Amino acid sequence: MRVVTVEEHFHHPEAIARVWELSGPPPTPPDAGFGEFLQRFSPDRESAERLDGPRLEHMDQVGIDVQVVSHGANSPSALDHPEAVDLCRKVNDDLAEQISRHPDRFRGFATIPLHDPEAAAGEFRRCVTELGFVGALIAGTCGGRFLDDPRFDPVLAAAAEVDLPIYIHPGMPPHGVTQAYYAGDWSTAAQFMFAGPAFGWHAEAGIHVLRLILSGAFDRHPGLKVLSGHWAEVLGFWLDRLDETFAWVGNLVRPVSAYYRDHVWVTPSGMYNQHQLDFVVGAVGADRIIHSEDFPYVVRDNVSTFLQEADLTEDQRHAIGHGNAEALLRI
Ligand code: GRE
Ligand code: ZN
Image 1: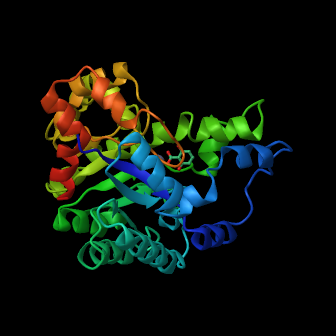
Image 2: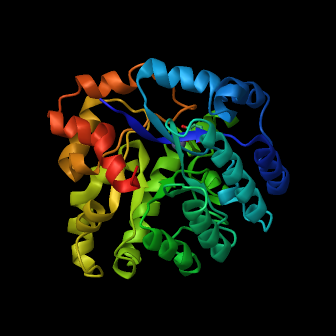
């Protein structure tokens, strides 16, 4: 079975270095063990930066035919600074160049500079029309603002116009949120994990999709489609509750779950767990699930065997493994 995975990342080292410089020092100085933790946690450079070598070997080993690649952590997409515009362009040009060496194995999602929404919309269109990219990926908030902020309407309009999705990927929460919710009597490494990949940024990414629904973004842009990783970033497990509670408010044209099922595609991001798969198939349907690994942060040996062995019908298996991605991304 052909396998297409859609939450797969690369690093552009110069862009990341500049994002670090322009973001300034962290608000809380890290404790002694943090540097060593980050080294252990960071993927090896060649796997992260290159779309060949160890990455291709891994894809061959675990049965991935096509990775749809986007920039990973420290993306200039979330950088709240005018230089984000140039940095995103560099990231996209480098990604396109690397894809062009293995066009049958890789496709790309655009990195768009949310600091300047008009430029972000323009870069999204350029990436689709000139570089052949198949969507865009954003990594959390920019300046603490979510995509439902009216300033981002040009970005949502561009996505609807090109008829390709925006991947609502997590990003580190704003400092005030981290202080209030994730700081405590534990190490900086534990705080980072709590605020980020363990839980916090998933809750935030779920909130991000819910904010789009509550804002009426999908009423204003009926063609808008989004991708949500990590088995729907908690939100997918809450649809009945959201329908019931927001019905009391009467603020939405349709139930939350109706927007969700029409506009959101969900991916596992390497969380290969049959219980979660079962739940999400029931909640949103197998025609809304697309496979993913979250390389190079998550590296699994069962990317395709998980699907092969999962309790699914053959139609569902093929839909999740490749058919839904092919239809949504026109690949
Ligand atoms: C992710 O993309 O989900 C991710 C990162 C950085 C660290 C861990 C992780 O971007 O899962
Ligand atoms: Zn990811």
